[in-house]
Image (tube, rainbow over all chains, first blue to last red):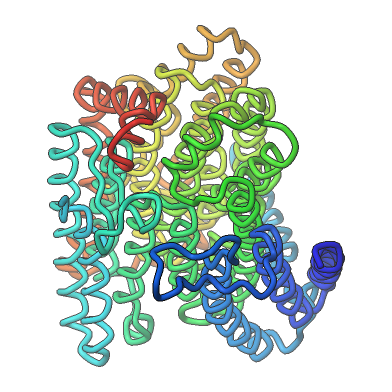
Amino acid sequence: MEPVLAVVIGGLYAAGMYLMVRRSIVKMIFGLALLGNAANLLIFTVGRLTRGRPPHIPLDSALPSLPVADPVPQALILTAIVIGFGVQAFALVLIKRVYQTVGSDDQDVMLTENQEQEQQGHRLRDTGQERQGEEA
Amino acid sequence: MNNLLFLPLLIPLATAIAGLLAWNRRKLQRLLGVCSSAALLIVGLMLLATVQQQGVISAQAGNWPAPFGITLVADLLSSLLIVATGLMGLCVTVYSLADTDTRQESLGYHPLLQVLLLGICGSFLTGDLFNLYVWFEVMLIASFVLLALGGQREQMEGAIKYVALNLIASALLLAGIGLLYGVTGTLNMAHLAIRLQSMPHTGTIPVIAALLFCAFSIKAAVFPFYFWLPASYHTPPIAVITIFSALLSKVGIYVLIRVFTLIFPQETLAGQPLILAAAGLTMLLGALGAVAQPELRRMLAFCVVSQIGYLLMGLGLFTALALSGSIFFMLHIMAAKSALFLTTGVVARLTGSSSLAELGGLYRRYPLLAALFLVPALSVAGIPPLSGFWGKLALVQAGLQSGQYLMVAVALGVSVLTLYYLTNAWIHIYWKPAPEAAAKLQYLPPHRRHQLLAPTLLLALFSLVLGLLPEPLFRLCHSAAEQVLNPSSYITAVLGTLP
């Protein structure tokens, strides 16, 4: 079972990374979700896969009969899924708001930084020249 | 039981809940916010006093014995940082009484700030790696909303970058934690330290260390991962950036120090050149970025990155003196950098601009404001007798003792650059004659002015006093560093006995 899961995890990471480098923010969020799922499956797999041995303690004993499946990784995954759910819900609302304000889901269109900086650079240079003129 | 350990978590949590219940009563929310931050500061000081008397203290949630339940631990380092969190929380809450507009307040600004403080305190106090991940997410979700609150176009752009990068960091952290559990079978940090001592450090363990290092470095904005910080820190309201720059990136550095001294000391020593290179490049590129910025908030955002390098340098050198320098520097930079951000906010409120070209001549009208920028600026640059000098002195001394001359040269060179761009900004804002196109100054009513200036003044004075009287705090930082480097007291406090 481990080799199959290893391939699945690798595939999920690859797909997540690929989606994240796309320009569309919707695909970016999908990529993030895939990365989270890959991490969850990774925890599941490295926490040892034990088949059909639930960690139950029989009534007449104080210890479970070993080997049993480790419940901790599953508890961790459950927590991570719930957190991931909240974060992804927020991210979806955020990209909806972004789409409303920007009118596009392309990250390049969103970029106002370069234009702004150029304008400010010009302004700074202009005032510098003016002052030199005054001094002269 | 050390129930005191739960108070830094319960106070912001209860306040956030009460604030959410009082959704439409903004005055009550404001009052709750200020009271809660003040209470956090007091509890932090009590915690620090207790830790100084009794050594490291720990508490087990639900009385589950140590490696099985969730452990809260406070040593000198974490209690110092709790005090700093309370102080910064109080300053920023008071400042935002005047700075935050009603729209942001009606969208739950004050409860969210408390959730952020909750996540930060949780990260400082937890003794369990997975619990740390949970606190990180609490902190992140609050910071996401604070960053996007108000919904300006440029805020959205910053928020997208911040969210994406931080979620990648969380995925890396989660993968690292999962792998570590697979290898060691435990998540309690003290227990991990013991288990990893008796294991050969080959194969997956260095890989896990690298994964965690990358995850925390993204959060702390360390060299190859710092670009999200200047891209998103110039957009939100100034009070929000102040608390982000003062606390969020420092949480990343705190966790790096904690994890790489307690759990992976061998990997830290093996990776020393790498950590030092990352520290040096963070300093240098941050400073070069700041020099090139014509806009004050962007410049300060790059300055935040640059100073992170100094904090990492202490971990890279890995001696008691270097780490105490880092811790001292961390406390200094929180106060000094926040004072810079807060005065920038006041200037932006007065003039409606934070572009260096559009500002000027403020010294004549507001000499106090000019002093409130100049003192922290010189302190950040490391001019004696201000607080930044002592932190840098300790780091440079430690670097010379370890023979890392290149690192020392970079640290000193970056100080010169810092001095250049901060004094240059000061000259532009306060000293040069006001440009003719400058807008008329806004009038600030007195009560609002006091709310804006009191926290700024407090932080600038803190930086000044820390510079004139560094001895008591530096001694405290030194014992904190020694505690961090000899984790036996931490492990005994958590697990009871040292096996």
